[in-house]
Image 1 (cartoon, rainbow, N blue to C red):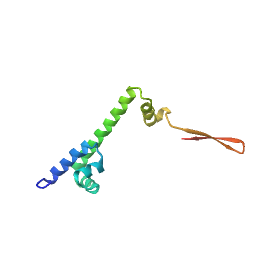
Image 2: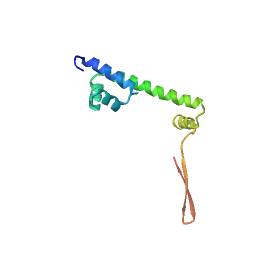
Image 3: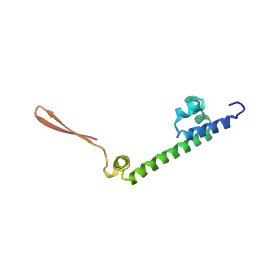
Image 4: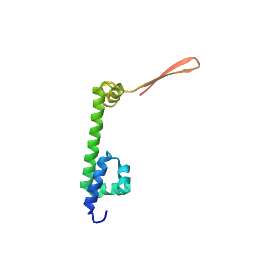
Length: 112
């Protein structure tokens, strides 16, 4: 990347980063830098870190939208996943119950 300014280099990296859905290692490999360089750029250049954060937020939004679409379609696994993560205050928590027999006595365990 001869004759490319440092800022232009970072901007080109950000395009690759976004195309790779915020995957740091994959983006670094494709661009030809180490992950240490990426994290150094985040530390030393606030504008770069801010754009990285915006890209990662948009990817999270994309994932959330995809999950909500599955829920709208009635996907049971998606519904349970959402309830388990977002509705704990309403009593949606995964529990494992087991019965153990020790010397003909039954002990019931509830693991939260």
